[in-house]
Image 1 (cartoon, rainbow, N blue to C red):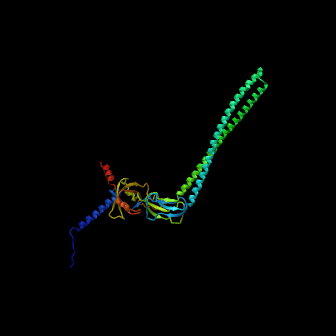
Image 2: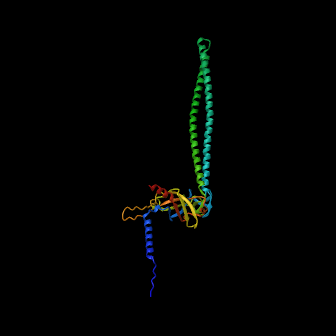
Image 3: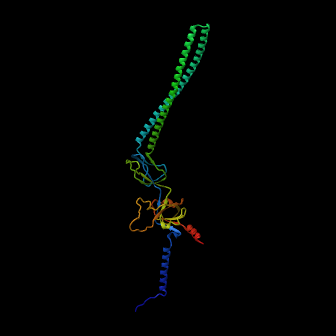
Length: 358
């Protein structure tokens, strides 16, 4: 004899469950994903603006001042290259600057001496003019005396000769002064050329000193050494990555949201973040910016579906989330950690609902 258990009302309960599931599915499929009051994603990671340090001069690594994962301060020495040849270049440049400075000083001394020569020529010319004026007066006086008989012909001839001598001396000193004045222009040109050579030598020295400073690779900011590829005694080329530095401050989260979630996401909205590596810890942040293009659009080999069958794929766009400062757990974050952010868009939803009311 078999017994069959029957539960009164079971078909009705099952029917209600099916109807509820159908209603839930209809609501979910019939509403846009962006209408949710909170937008979350699991495609998010801790990021930082990493700094890759490379030498600006080739050379041999002479000193490694840091180890992997070491915390460093801004300005701290990381790597030092062998700088002996660079120091020699600086010394040679300094010698050329000294020689150029000496050339400028020599021309300056010539110009100073030449000014004295010009003054002497001007004084001599002034004396010649006075002598010529006196000789001219004597010449006129003795000429008159010779004509009225009160003077001798010899005295007249002597006065005339003295005038000619004074006139010749004046012409000579005028030529001397003119030549001295022309020489001033030549000396000034030599001084300008010497000064230009000095400026070029100083620029060469500055370049040599700058190249010498490149032998010391220091931390541009405080952070942690993430990847140290430099090896003691190894030869490095210009632009070769030696150290990667993760900044101590400025960590952020890059979350890639589906395009169907972005309708109500705005800059400044509050974000709560769950980090996989920190269970039970909730960090706070805010939306800093939204990317202007999807990751596929920025890819060097972006897909262009122009021919053949087409399958629509929902795109993802990066959303940058800034972490609020002062949170103790920030010190435990590391670049690359997985994060689950949740953006609160309730205010935008409320505003839109208010505008939609008649």
